[in-house]
Image 1 (cartoon, rainbow, N blue to C red):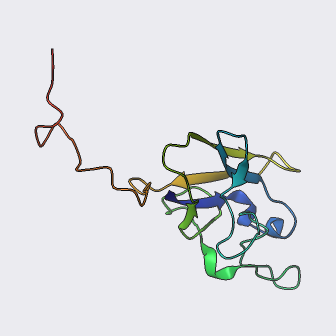
Image 2 (tube, rainbow, N blue to C red; image 1 turned 120 degrees about the vertical axis):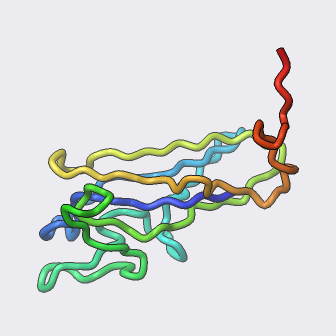
Length: 146
């Protein structure tokens, strides 16, 4: 299963990205209690954060995983955060018939002045398992029973 998300933060201003990063995780847990964090920088074991995906600040800290940094925002941006990542994919192998839970965890770390946010892309949740044709009211399925 997979879905798309992006991380945005006020910590992408000044040199906060060099030191401060809010805590963020997508925790997928199976019915045996085994948990995995899906919020990893693609191709790495790095947790997604302002310190692991950043443009860097000249003379203070180097850029990290810059290919996943989206942009710095301004007052005209749709997202009211100083900066944001590109859209990334959270994915995991799952076993059909197994029961899973998933949690989004985000919290301030080391400071309470600068916030972060996670945005999930609408309609991006998918599985590689065919679930049959879409059953919608618009195409007459499911029928309404009274």
